[in-house]
Image 1 (cartoon, rainbow, N blue to C red):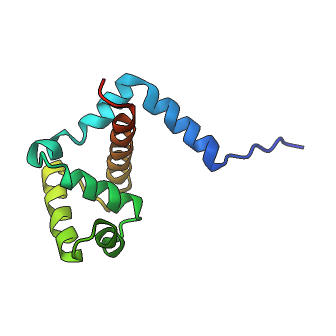
Image 2: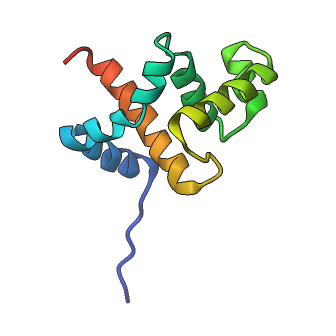
Image 3: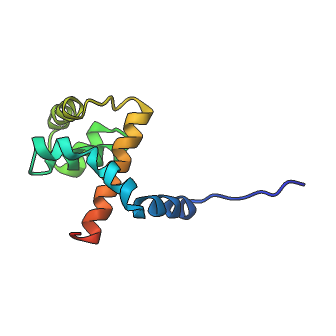
Length: 113
């Protein structure tokens, strides 16, 4: 009889936390967002991207959470795609962008450093 190992959300979170804790990986991941910070120092584009990815690519949900019209989200996403040169329908691009937004959120929680 083969052993069965269960992977749950907590286990996956621990894996990601360990990866984010490795500073070189975290720096590379966060550098993905630098062009957005350069294009929009207010951080609006990064917040929009993070929310869009967290809400499973729902323009409607993202607009509701951010308190703006859905057309505003569509415009911002167009700008994000242009600035980063990514295709948010591509799983690899989406994953890289999502990891980057999460790494930045962790850095914000950690404070300056």
